[in-house]
Length: 187
Image 1 (spheres, one colour):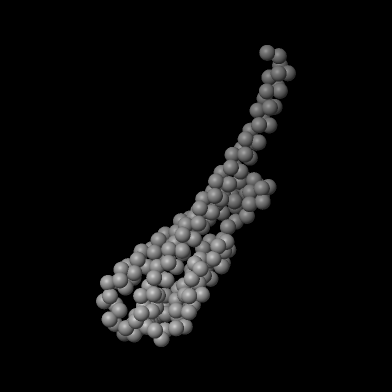
Image 2 (cartoon, one colour):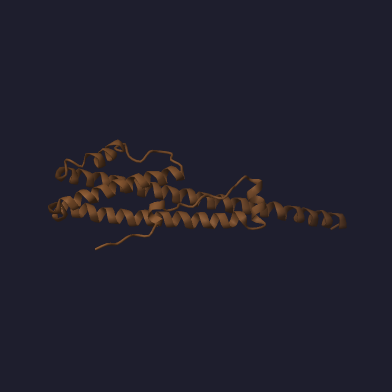
């Protein structure tokens, strides 16, 4: 082979290495972004499941507690289910509203001790506990995926590629302010 061909091959390899690295890094970032979107979808599924379980519980409690109208009216307003295409902040706000409904249900249940022994009610309570655990797991998966993506985005030299393709850090799913405060226990 001629010397100039060897030089051209070496120059070609030197030019292709950064391009290959850029494409590989970009694809890795895009895959991690898809994992974040998938995890956010998991939160949506858990929120919908929670909404359905709470709606059924409300119907059960409603038979026992006719006068708890305000709490139940909130649920009726949300009968259409989890609104589509919510931002992360709107999902957190929706969860806060559902927490209010669940608190109202708990107050109604305390007023009707016979309801606590009702098999349907007990099954629904167990179902809600299961849904709450699923929702917690979905939040953890989401935050884990966001952490992995954000670490890649801010780490050099991947941050260069992230900046070039316009990728920015994602927000973590955070707890409601009310749940961050200390719980008061009294006997």
